[in-house]
Image (tube, rainbow, N blue to C red; front, side, top):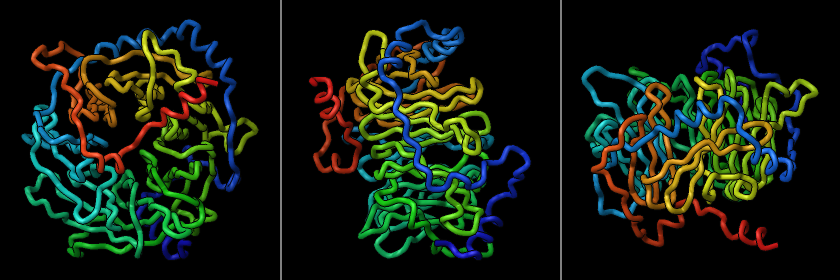
Length: 441
């Protein structure tokens, strides 16, 4: 547990959050586990009906996405597991893209040309996740060697400029940095009986030029297995959500003194969590996806009311979704579109087709599909709200830039690249077997 001194420190790190202006509810539902299964027959019936009136407008916007750039060729068989884009705009400097690769590296690309500018590695450990800082071009990634590493994305040096060191035996597999770049939180694999959320002060202090930092503290009581996902709130630096292979999705207010009181609520996905995120107006909703292609969606506005917080819970999306002229093999992640005030789910097929699904309380609705880009499973994507562009990465080692505009005919679909068997130990394997068994029953 954190001490009172730690909590006071976090309150200094996070910007003062005015609870009178749309704050999150206090911890009245701590420890309450929410699980509601959606009636699959009703959902399937709904999905066969006509889409809502605004669906045509949404479909038109996304259907007009075409490939305008494909990454420069590489002979190395590498899966592209994560993508993030620089959030800063600097005059006369190219926009940067960071891509986490299954060979243990992070590649930095020029966004407009998709040329590889430089590459960072996590030796002796393996990297998990990639994230740009919100206010500068620093790159972060958690590592199995027990550190979170920071690089200067515009520096030619491959050496990290800073290491955030964990406790002995920590193996970090997830992380995030707060919206004001003040706090880093990383999740660990379960070692012995411990699965931790570890916190650091991430502020860059010109008076303190040390290259390594020790933790501020850790949460140790709220997850019982590997912490696979960590996501800070997009605008409130004190709020963070975590997901685990124990099936639990926990929401915390880290400005509160100790772990027990900081836990705002616990939701249960009833399966191993593969992806989590924030959505809704003022980002007061959370969603998660599971390793067996389940989807859950909760509304935190209802924590202090008699209304159920579960908006949607589907055990296996593949069993209920009606994809026009095709199938859905897996889910990739979620996308909350602020302009539309709408949550979307991105999924796909093993042959590289990308499906966009719209989330409603009645179910998931297929909006459109993107063809002709990837030749294998799509592992990652990054949506740019400013120019409505989409970056996608897959098992064919290709990074694609999609925009609303004419397709450049010089870009042809690439074949899937074979990959060494050792890499399969590090990448997500979608659970097709359990799905096939259920369909046979």
